[in-house]
Length: 285
Image (cartoon, rainbow, N blue to C red; front, side, top):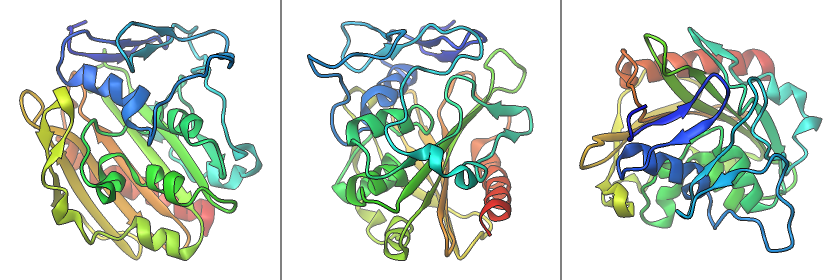
């Protein structure tokens, strides 16, 4: 495996490269950048068994699991009570299938922010870049804003990760979230005002970048897409589409990955979003 790579192999072992390129930043994003605060166990808390292996590098985590075994991070909410929302998530898209390591799940709020950030962030990767607080719903995901600003009963966040293994001819990894709750929350999550202030993002060793909108076919009552651009050896960190409907907000995020999918992620994104929207409509209408 190249040193600058993120791999979940056939044995569901999450492996992170050791250089300072895209893979390391993505691994950091899995463990920490997705969280509004630090994600760590307190001195008196027990870690799930089997425990993750951790390097001395802050934010670097990995699990060595048997094939088909999920990553041992417990659902911090009451997601099991809403199977209808779980059925709104994609389980297949072409050769990509729901991840065995991070299968689809529903988190019912309120939930501990740190624990929910790790649990959901393992399914829907955030970018390693950040800017003003209002940029979080674009750089990190609508789910992070829902968790941070609307952590209340009646809000549900469904999340999943689909993948076509990196050792195939056309690898692909992407995450999907579906959020339900009060109309004012959905309006806020889909509000694009202020996006122009997210053109000077920073991410430490991940460099700098910006939120760059681009056109996609309309879906739902409102839809929009954007790239999170980068610098150095990562020109684009993520491709994201958000769909607003009267009942939910849906988001698809394709992270930068090695090796790259054969089809341009900007072309794949609206196809995945259309499939995700069709499934969510069938489940939630």
